[in-house]
Length: 636
Image (cartoon, rainbow, N blue to C red; front, side, top):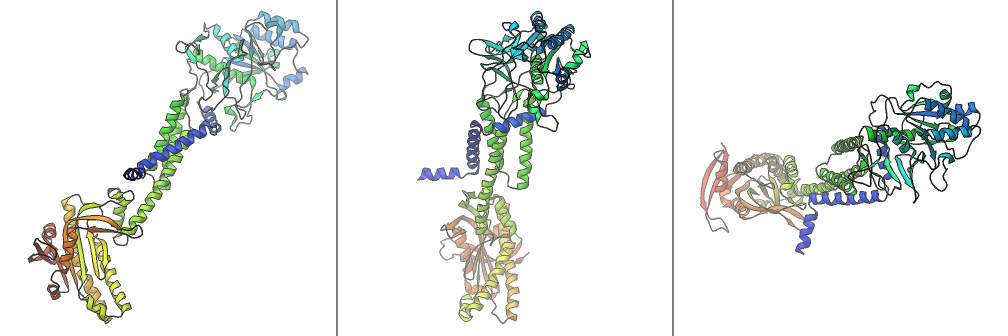
């Protein structure tokens, strides 16, 4: 039973609640992510980062595209182009001395006339790469160079949703390794630089270009979940440049309108951009305000080849993701951070502001990491942070709402708004599991009682008596509250008030001030009863006087009662003595309208702020030791 009680107390501690909620949210988000439900959102975030990349400031691209446009097809009056037309185009390009020429047009069968001429150009020029399509249902390369290293597959990976984000370097059929079109072109270009693909020194299973290691993409890299990672894949960065890829139409090339310096030492890709042939793909750049949302296949290959050249020549690092453990830790950190922040946020406006700031910080961290070639998850940590912060905030708000309602039920009717607010602001000092913890405090207790109430209650009509008494109690309660006291109890015509609860007093100065407040309250009650008597006199109602006893000492403050009826009260010797002072020598009280008696402990606290008379040392009822009693006359 004790273990269960302690466990329950532990669970209901705010920070434990925050950790618990954050943990639940964390596992829920991890579950959603592992099931692939967040993949689409993470890939959308990836696409946004791609579009937000700064423009590369280099003056020109090493890749030039010769486009076979719709106008070119109309001009030649047929598709596919004849071998003679393609041979003429390749011959013109070769005279401009490019480093590599890529033919992104299938040539598995001859298209006369000019077939022998085209075969000769394929055989004689070692820098020409011709495409094939991989697989059993693919398209074979030209027969004349089918056994050479100048063929390459032009297959393009498309993610669910139709967007290209990944590039291929190699594919294999179990017997033979095939090179991608872009890789063949890049290696042909780099041969002049003396750069060849090598095994990475640290991870021999990885390819290295010019000292830059290019690790293969895993199936769960970044935002992917169970992606098909066959072959050797990497992430295409789709880096923008000032000029972009320079392109010329086939007609312009054949007419001799393409300057040789635009071709020399470049990679030239001949590809189809005619709308009727539908060689188009969506990329991360496709979402935006541009009119054309699609990119043709030749440009996709140009992006990949250009990126491979930057790996080898500029030391540009490929974009990689964190390990699975690192990503889990990253999400856990943000989930926990959301829970911890939720402990301190209550205002909807402040929650919105904090949420925006934290999400902006998360966005900037992941974006700058992205610019430095790291793909760090954005959506799962953002979701974890928001849900943890929101649920913990709601939980704490609901908890505090109940606590406030409970505290206000105990105190609000008996203390001033300022004291009630102070109790709420400092609730952690005396609340334990939502209820005030028992405390031993130094308090000043005030008891007051009406003179001759018993006889009055026998003489007055019951309704009149209740109205008469309520008027008195309401007035006196206000006086107590105005002086910082807490009305503890009503006993018929009697009032019990505490000064110094529920917040503990930590200094003697604070204890002294409570005693001064209690005596000032008693004097104010004297004035108030005189004012009420004047009103009652005009209404032909009985007048009365009051007896007040005040004592400062140690008492236990606690919530007593059943779950249906609770009361915050003080118990102890100081309370008993204050009650005895109030009832001490009732005959002695008849000589004045209001009699105020205090004990020696209270007298030592109030100093010389009040006029006092010593009554003497007395043994009060129920007490063995003598107590020095003083009577308050007025303020100094």
